[in-house]
Amino acid sequence: MRSWVVLFALAPLLAQADVFNTFGYGPRATAMGGAMTAEANDYTAVFYNPALLVDRKDVNFGFNFQFYRMVADVKSKDLAKPLDLSNSNAPDSVGTSVGLLFPLGGKVKNHLALGLGVYLPTANLLRVNIVGSNQPYWYRYHASPERLILHLGAGIKIVDWLKVGLGVQALADLIGNGANVSVDLFSKQVNSGDLNAYLATRVAPVFSLAVTPHKRIRLGVTFKWEMKLKVVIPAKVDLEGIGTLGFTVSGVAHFTPHTLNFGAAFDATENLTFTLDGEWQNWSAAPSPYVGINIDLSGPTLEALGLGSALDVTSAEQKPGFTDTFGVRAGAEYRVSERFAARAGAFLRPTPVPKQDTQGTNLLDGTAIGITGGIGFNFSDPLEIFQHPVQIDVAGQAQFLLSREANKAAVDSQPGYTYSANVYGVTAAIRYDF
Image (tube, rainbow, N blue to C red; front, side, top):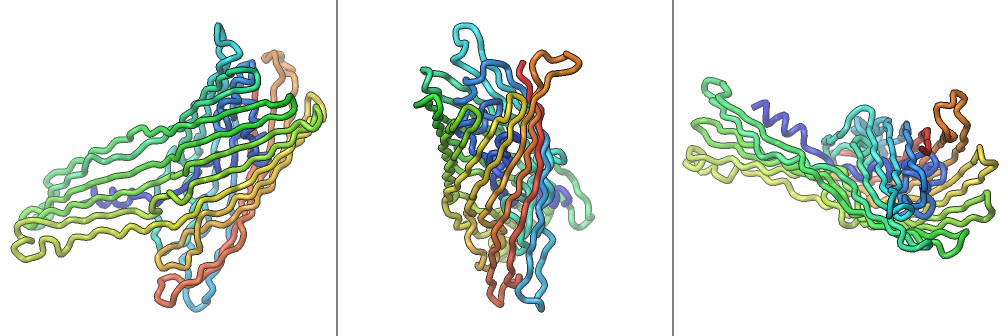
């Protein structure tokens, strides 16, 4: 019996958006509010706009570390009725990422470049967890930062003013072929048992364009296909002499919607650049955020008692009712000298999550206002190990999730409550051109 209990515990609750979407990829991008669709000029272009990979003429490598912490404020509106706060503050997001940009040579020199971006969470390569629907938890922040992220891309220069990009983002489905257990209830023995499951590779395409209509103006557009991790875990327990208990646990985790980014970068002077991005996300297509359970109890003994289907249970699908969103990002970079640059940015990210007044839904999320800033500097290696300057970038970010409230009916297990949160973080990276 332990086998199917373990499987049940592995059932996921949907968590949305990966860490690059939520916090940014690389300190330069983070410091400039994530407005990089027309401006990513290093390995981070594999995420923001693969077409821009071809602009780099040297092999570019980067290693990045980031840390983010939430400070949440969730309060019951009815002091006489307790509120389950066990998941009201998201865990810290800690991880490292690496990136590589590799321009090809030969007959495609200056016309084709490849890129790779990988994020590794410090604690878990992949976290899929279940939280009861009666527990308020932070939909965007609770588990989504804890998963391996892989982006591959290629930038192709058609003519000097037009580049195209192609890429993929990779994840994996957790598919169970079945868990089978045979139990003799009279002797209280497990006679046999087996478990068969595998991770199936899932990829989603990325398409992008980069246009340079003027030497000081750059335009970009990127479309990312939706990504999700599907979990299907069937199990069967043969209760000898009584019947068979069959059940399937299924769900979707780490969902990110179809996303369309379009942006512009403008060099006001040789040393000052402004960037602006718009972001549309197709949240109305989001699947149910809750685990699906199907239980089927059958067998000759149960049929004889007229209980063949009386004990069957199928959980009702609860649609999230999300809405599409349109966010805005802006950034600026001032290059004080060849050695030093200062950066700043901001963003507005509307929430797709509706008010949680309905019974049995407690997804915490709010419209976020982000303030960002950072610096970049480079220096020559005093040991002369590296021929080119070593680039160091540092950025800080603060996200302010605007206050909301959930008004619950008297019959709801949870009282009404108010909630808001701030998320603070830092990120640093070392970059080098070979």
